[in-house]
Image 1 (cartoon, rainbow, N blue to C red):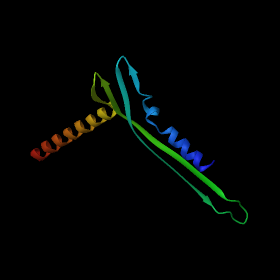
Image 2 (cartoon, rainbow, N blue to C red):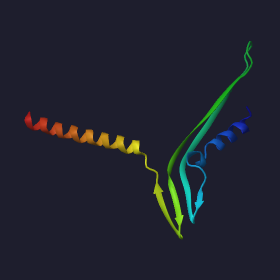
Image 3 (cartoon, rainbow, N blue to C red):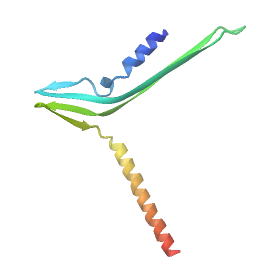
Length: 112
């Protein structure tokens, strides 16, 4: 594959619209999605040997994460963040576990 085609295809795949979709304008309200988009690609070639021709390889990858939306209505703008419920729950569980560990350690120190 041509290197320009590879980079162009990667850039086309890593867009905010892949996370959220296009901005929405309805009934005087405009909703503009915002996302973190990151990506990269790499490749290489091994010089041809005596019994083998050149070998080439490459790949690309990316990460998209919704951050939230801007809502424009009546001349005012407000930010509405995207909430990752799984991340919130895991953070709460880890924090609760740590609180319990600290309480148990304090109790053991007092008893011992």
